[in-house]
Image 1 (cartoon, rainbow, N blue to C red):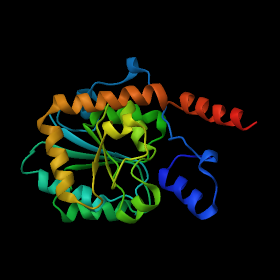
Image 2: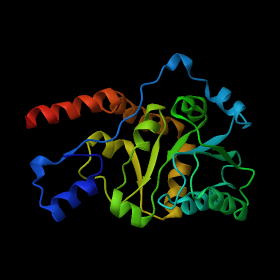
Image 3: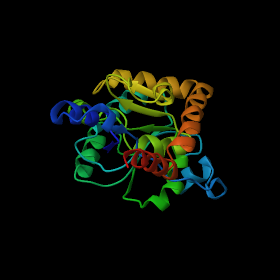
Image 4: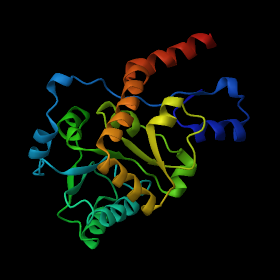
Length: 238
């Protein structure tokens, strides 16, 4: 079995008694980018109507109850007095979109959050370069079911973004993921605030973390590399 989630691997082993040698953790991948076609950060922000000197949080994906937008938006509201040029770019649509928009309004963030709506993958390259941080915190319940690492990690890392996720441990994931992803406890806004401030105040450290994960993702988690790993598992099974 090829499984992209460590908790799912554990469930398959524990509940269905599938032996560990038959379970293979292979994380979801990402597309390779044509760097010559990417806009600069300033150009991407201009297209979104954002100042060139913004510090931009980012989210990419379906907007629904699995993802902890309450904590993300609360952390942003706390950070705003300390980072006056802070914005949040949310790319995607979903069943919770209107609720997230209401949360932003209630927190006084309506003019600081950009909702692009759904974008097809070929349009990601026009928006993600505007971001400084890729956020993907799940709720507590979702972390327990799906774990801290999911598809967004590879996509964010392909664009050289520091990646922030929620969870209790990165044990069991590749060492490069353990050292390259910033982990916060689920539903802990102060912890997310600390990470955002750290990344904003030390761009050199943020860049080093992002580049380390980027190198790993582009060597091991492109869809071509993922397909090769799956084929290798299949060949051993024949």
